[in-house]
Length: 149
Image (cartoon, rainbow, N blue to C red):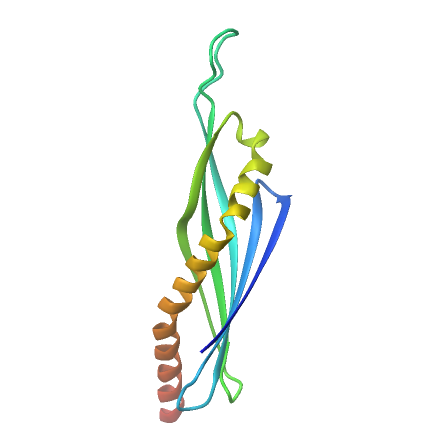
């Protein structure tokens, strides 16, 4: 099985959260021929503002709590050109919090996600491993339904 990683960090601010994209490709040997699966994972950040602004002279209790999730799209192509697609999500792959307003911490949150790229690559690798049996089952089901037609 061949693995190749390309982690592309886009720290621009898109909507309310930063975006990180992780690409992964693998080739699986199957009795019908090689199967090439490409995985495209988008990291999304959910933010929750907690606490309150306090009067002058008292410490603020404002806190921005964030969690990151990976939304993965798989496109697999068989040797004879059939495409097997799937979408799935892994919730809470990274999390943290910062004091203050979420709007003021967008860049810090993006940097925190970027620093965790090796962890995110581990998550996408685990997702690919989990998807392997599903992919092969989808292929076998597709092949058996094509034979009965």
